[in-house]
Image 1 (cartoon, rainbow, N blue to C red):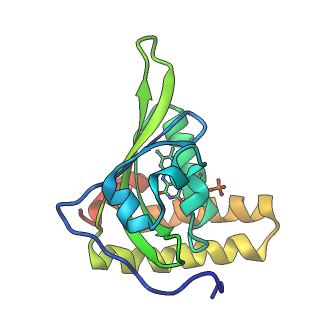
Image 2 (image 1 turned 90 degrees about the horizontal axis):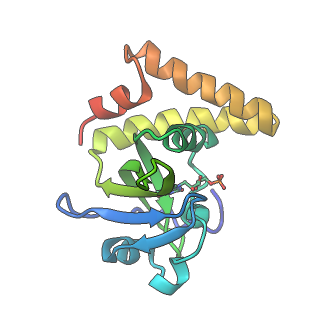
Length: 173
Ligand SMILES: Cc1cc2nc3c(=O)[nH]c(=O)nc-3n(C[C@H](O)[C@H](O)[C@H](O)COP(=O)(O)O)c2cc1C
């Protein structure tokens, strides 16, 4: 395991929502108190930073590729994400990420609301993400991402779902 990680999981309550907003490039422009509490950072440390400041190395690149493809095309996405806290702890979320539009329909930023996931969903996603990471690390950057993205698509379809979102929502909130 990465030495900067503690292996300790943090959890939050079912009635809590971790919220952040970004500009169109993914820089954080707002984080609510629950985001601040669980991440271990201060507001000053997160504002203006790229959202990958809380990226956990267990997250496959294919998931973020899909996320950005969807939201930059003006769509919403639901995704399971494991995030890294300042001290190396981690926490799992079920994120709902949406674009914000101005009156002309241009994307002016993004918004993410995160709820605590079901245990069963975390177990399923940890296994799937580990397989995707394996593909990403066994190959060069480009080929790894292509293989991992294809494997993500295949996993969703072989489980009988039409899309990543349908699969994610089937795991429950
Ligand atoms: C509104 C919004 C919320 C995001 N939330 C997270 C998050 O909680 N954790 C995370 O690792 N990336 C999040 N991202 C994605 C990051 O911008 C970034 O793509 C990801 O961390 C992967 O980093 P990389 O592109 O440098 O590999 C979010 C992006 C947006 C637009």
